[in-house]
Amino acid sequence: TIAKHIDGAAAASKAILIDCFAGVGGNIIAFAQSERWKRVYAIEKDPRALACAKHNAEIYGVGGRISWYEGDCFEILRKELAELSHHSIIFASPPWGGPGYRSDRIFDLAKMQPYTLTDLLFPFQQMTEDVVLYLPRTSDVRQLAKRSSEGSKTTVMHYCMEGASK
Image (cartoon, rainbow, N blue to C red):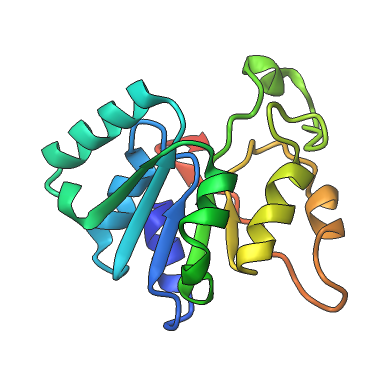
């Protein structure tokens, strides 16, 4: 799974995982179940989705391993979690802007809504260089490559799970 891959790829010095768009908890639960992370933090601005995430985490027995935040992820990162930056990986599966992304042969990350690629990466990379974005499979990887520092590499993973491309 994605959580297992991130668990194995992360540097040992990274002990904290922050999910900036936790939704109803699927990803953060998988991260908490791995026991790889000293602590996992879930941020969600929709109170109903956050309530579902907390409930789901309890069902899976990991509610006590997750710190929950309700609100804007950028503000919470800046005001509440900034001191964790050197030990953190930021994971984000942001909203993509509705089902229209499926009809695009190549998905333009500059048109992603409500947050563009720049809207996401700039504040995340202010906190840590270790950022994982879960994006549509048709995303324009050239846009990701342009965001890499000179001489560095950006890893792009494409998953096939249960017969479907992810």
